[in-house]
Length: 224
Image 1 (tube, rainbow, N blue to C red):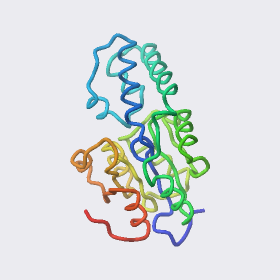
Image 2 (image 1 turned 45 degrees about the horizontal axis):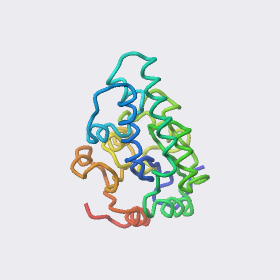
Image 3 (image 1 turned 90 degrees about the vertical axis):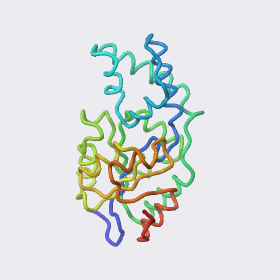
Image 4 (image 1 turned 180 degrees about the vertical axis):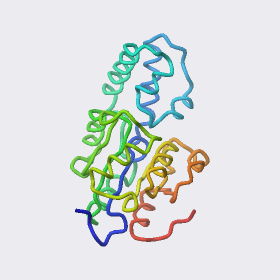
């Protein structure tokens, strides 16, 4: 049953670039994979543009061979997991903001394009264990952001209509998916994407810090 008396009965979050700073780890994992598989290196900006897209989609850009895609994913994850705990940190105020949203009665979910094992590693490392009611990952369905399907799956699992929810994310893919799902959007400005890149997807709110999220949940009007 959804809570009453709170502005957003359901709050959904992206993970990488929104709750945790894992961007350098992700980029270096891609660079490592390209070296191991003998592929031409790509600049950081190339990988940032695709952040929030499942690995199976990213590596399909380089090969149509399903087996090679799986080998590239395995290479990426081996390096990523080996360096995860020294390269991932929660953004300042993230844990406190999530705890406060939970305390006020909102049901919480994560919608991410990473796999469940990787997500659970990050949740545990950064102290988010037990705070989220639902996790939707790339293991749950074939579609991924910017498709609205993962968002709609999370809302269905939480028993919420789009109008009852807020989505907090850092990428244009997040905002596009959520807008098409009919849910209110809050765009983070601390991730790897610029305001100009995100603005193309017309978010409802802009967050310069997690303190802004707290003000939004309290009913304050944020500067545009």
